Image 1 (tube, rainbow, N blue to C red):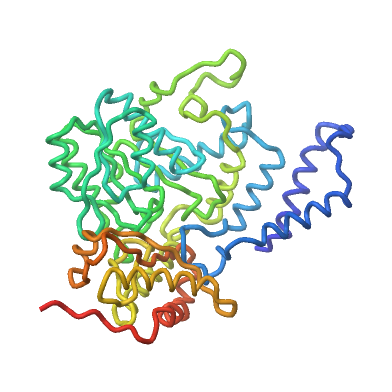
Image 2 (tube, rainbow, N blue to C red):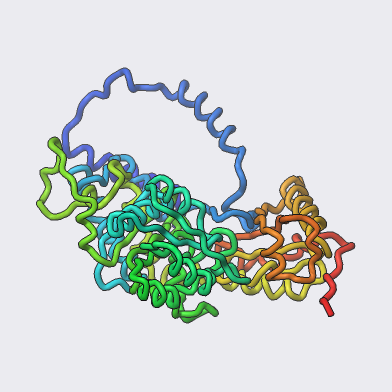
Length: 458
């Protein structure tokens, strides 16, 4: 699709719609002439150039990428009318679109019943899930893995709920024995499992956690903010089906369409499998809501004002790339193949080694060095030299791991410091699959000619 053409069509559609209500003269206080705006825009464009090329395969760092053109067109078209999806009277069309896309997200997880809405992102969505957890089990705590997103510990503090970190295994997944111990020794009302940790992309054994948590009468919340759309590939591309199929048996799930859903920031979502949790959100206002008596979006959300444009962008994207295996699933499959393909190349390299095998599309790796000190130094150098190379730059990110995490994964490394950084690449763009050979070659060069495979312990 030609972006410029459809952006102009979005502007034209808004003008056609506006004309239905009659002409009027804009107030002179808001008018700005083209010469004045041109100067401001030139400064703006120059400032915006100070950015990383998230769109390009050279960027293999954090979990960011540009939105799909369909999402850009949908967002702009709705933004020109600026609906507020707090209640239907703030934007009838986009509120209806939000209800429809949330139902599609629920279908992606196999939920037979649901209550949910879009949010500004995963942190807000997780806050809402934990808020309902607190209201459902007052005075009980929350268990989450030590590799879960830091917002869970933070939100427990905000909600004044006891938070209990749970150890992980050598693959970065929640350790079930450690979970049993926490559930036995602490007063836990909710267990948070992660479907795609932001560090390594690890997927907790959700199907096993559900069984354990239920025996202790605890709720289960799934933080699938990063990995949620991989539910479309459950049982394919080397992704086990069981953890994803178990989500329908959990109490709530969070997913971020602004990651694998190809949306602009911010667009998260929270879904509850029991619609009766709406009782925890109910409220009234003396100055709004002339819409029907049915629950509206503002009555099932902690947020008030929310961008209707986010719902419009997701709705239009789902019309052309639906959340199905043959739709968005094809995009995720390319990212997954890129990750597994790169893992194989790294395993065959004398200069690099995997930190751990990828569960999804996040690859973690390090220069082949014998000590943690040398690993950390090499990581810092590769990151700096890669990003500052004027002719052939490559953009990476890092993950810091403690010595115990290295011991579980690489017992041969000499642990001469308490922690070390490894390299981390989020292959969230499908183009990584076709550009993989060049990316791997570039990282190998950065690792340096003198690198040798670490010795295997006797």
